[in-house]
Image 1 (tube, helix red, strand yellow):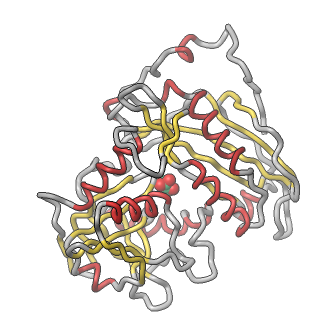
Image 2 (image 1 turned 45 degrees about the vertical axis):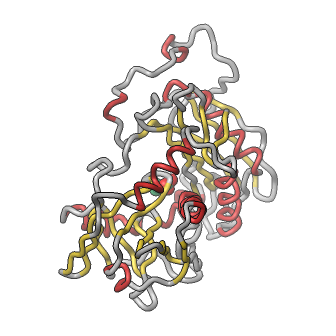
Image 3 (image 1 turned 120 degrees about the vertical axis):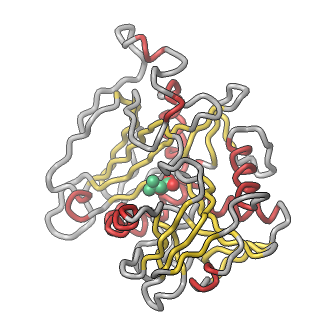
Length: 355
Ligand code: COI
């Protein structure tokens, strides 16, 4: 990796880096990568601990053509967000949970991982260094992407001899082009996202390219995203391409149990706790597609999508529409989650971490 270490800001830095806000159109943030000022980097060799990382100038990285990540997909990532509260505070949402999930993923993929403390410090340093890219209140958030990759060369199929931990960030608005409007989901039973014993439960980079064909096909037909079914019975719902799925029937909220094929979403588990605290019964279990089609309301959750209301689900030629107006459970949960994230609602778990 090329490192241009920037431990302190130099007097020769462009003045922009000292401004309160970067000069971009904050009213039209989408979900594309916007280059920010700094990236965090740390390295370690196999069976060792990570060196102290550094915040460096943002830029491309250089890799061996034999890097484990390039050849054998040895890489995992996380997603977390920094929010600017109306009172000016900068808040992270449960970064320790991302750290723990990265450790679990690293163990599954035979990689070294940073300690929880190093991970959380790296996320904080990246957010603070890129503070001018954190959107004004109500305009979005700074999406923070911790990335752990096998950078050492390995020609045979074996764990890479060296790992790099990177944290970069980009200001983001709504994940879907349609904004916060209800999603139209397409149930794909041709391609499967994960299978028992695979790596569907961790945030391996290898879980994403295989679903592009399904997503692209669905988008070409005007759908927002895809719902995947289990690969064994081809009958139980699992998750959407980058979010967990929930259904509401009466006062009961249900979501597929995480049985090794479903990502253990941090928003998923936060929403389960929030819903229970609001008095809903929440069930984690096997959910057949038929049951999804009979729900009153459907929504998906994830760091990127937050809580997204689903307007319809299509399977074969059958399209089912759900409630999207009036008092929605998904909107109540969304408002509570965002309220906690931006520091408007104080929650008993102290999920919002001020930096
Ligand atoms: C996230 O919600 O952080 C994700 O991982 C989604 C991302 C793949 C767009």
